[in-house]
Image (cartoon, rainbow, N blue to C red; front, side, top):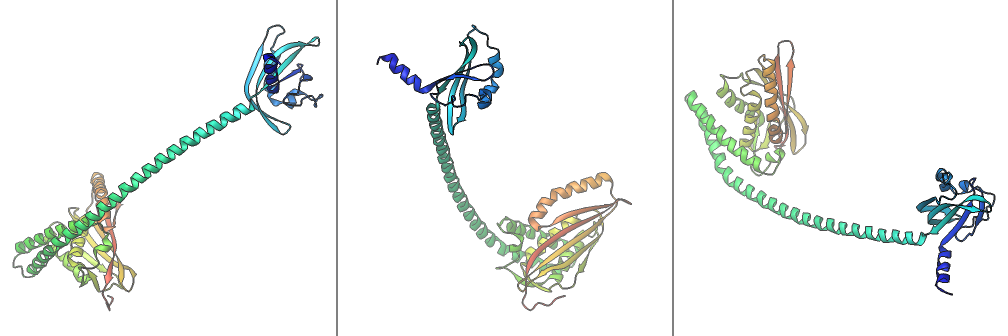
Length: 373
């Protein structure tokens, strides 16, 4: 065999030639790849749907014009086998009639190999990306661990510093509260109340700087047994005495079932209520305010209380109501963080009177054998 023989033998195994007429009737086939000859009466356009899609192109071929059509990488099944071939179409003169020559070049193995190479490449890229993500996750985990350690150090530092400062502050507040009881003049009383309020504000800020919730604010180690109603009356007495020229007093309404004795940090709770009243009463021109205290939940060790402060405000213009609403929106985030409460604003359309309500609820420890009011 010479080189042409080897070349012909190699091409013969990969190429099949089929001749058919314009109606799709099979005229001749070498059946190297697919056995078309066993379907002599079949219409090739029906047997191979891909031919139907190029039927219009084939009909435009003119005899002697050397027209060609190439369809690369056509995938099709035949006799339970799957092929990937390049199709080449041209017009020939066969047995005294014009016909179409269809060359099938089998490239199934080549395309399958390219597919495997591409798949391996994609898997390599995915693996590299996964490794990169794993490294980033590991780095983030180290950063999170470091951040948690820093938070732990900060928490311990804040707790230590706050505990060292709060002890003298509480003694100052207790002394101011004691001196107020024996104040001779209104001015002297106001001075002591201002001093107590300032020290309480500092103590409250120290408490808020701790990483704890309001519920934890009112539990050991520094809690004492107090009468909740007496505490509220004392706070309102201070508040109303200093603000009497600006606002009306707040009227208390204690609902049935409230425990008379609770275990709390008295200075902090007193300052909390003082701030609570200031949010709703300060500089709004109130005409009537009332505080309702009710019991939401009672357990052997603690109870959950709800405080609703209703504040009636003098008639306002629409612009004043808008400014009031804007002010409340600004205070809302601070209020929610500090008290877990919320503002509600209602406008009565008849006379533009404004009714504002402020909600606050939290848990406090219940003293043993505490009676209900």
